[in-house]
Length: 333
Length: 210
Image (tube, rainbow over the protein chains, first blue to last red):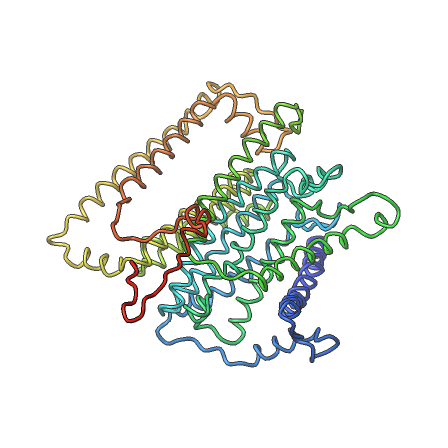
């Protein structure tokens, strides 16, 4: 039994060493988001609490903790409370398979990319449950929009992932990174990277695709009835998902933990740092898009997903497969 | 091994209880949530026997897509009310005999499947697939599906495509008076057709077609 206990203890320790930095960086990323947004609009953004305003998110979190949680009397209470918990949990469990370096990965499973895809497709439920259980029209409309949007863009993300997997020949995330040692996939598959980036914006309900919470039409979408810590959990889950999408993008296209060139000043920097730099770069792009691009209309959003991205990425699958087949570059041969 | 068994029993217990709750719960939306819980625990069982690919696909397809559609339908229609009406007005209702018939058919099918268990070894012998145990099960599934059974695989794909097209054809209707946006027309508009200069005569004005 002590052996069992020690295994349990070391596993819990490993999970904590991953989750605590993720949660802290989620708080920091909220600050970065607001800061970048402000700089684009020639404002200063949060700069009062702590150095450069770094502790702003902490102050916000404290405020949320001490606010009262209001549960509407006509809501479905169990599901109402369950919804933010599910959003948050799903956003955190996907980090289990992200490889930070060759040996620093919590669960190096064979079907890592499928696991990520499955967990992100489960993310819809937090939103639908929240919208339905609130028993109010704005949350419900927001939830329906969000579910339709996430299901649509999952299709194009899935096909983009197939493109990458064709070149790798494995569903393991570490193998995907190792396959990019010679060339990052952003170079041969650049159009796919662009589509992945836009689909990731839509998948995480970020502007310009933030129709589920279009404040001019739907108050705050599915979060309208939430308050206090429960609202903060939705919020944290959303940002953890955004970070995860950035991580997925850097693993699929930007060579994960690999350094750009394998020469002296670059290859001494430890590999997790490279992954973090890439995630941050992608996130700054996310934040810039939020500040620059105006919101899409709903029918344009659906058109973009189904009539533009889906045919285009399907064509690329055929092209990639044909190219690999013709030049006999298929992995595993 | 004991831990494995304990986890197996936990998941199968959750699966069975949630399957019962799907039919037993009064609220239809709750039924769908229990169905989702059922799917998730079944996929956990798949992963436990080492079929991680099937487990993940189960999650992606059933939980990520099919159950979302169920939820959509159930949330929009007021099915809960309907369901109560069915059972309250049981004298005039024809749903219960139909339901009984369907469940009888499913029960007999289950009996046949379980009876077939006896011939499992013979069935396995008749299929001559060489399984390479060193491959991951994603690879071995791919090897079987895309070589030995490629025609059946494509056929099932075609069946799904036909179902999709059928659904679109059945629900599609051309409505008149709907304004649609044509990107091509918007982009290809020239200055000459877009802008028109008119000399307005005093006290007469101009009439513009809207």
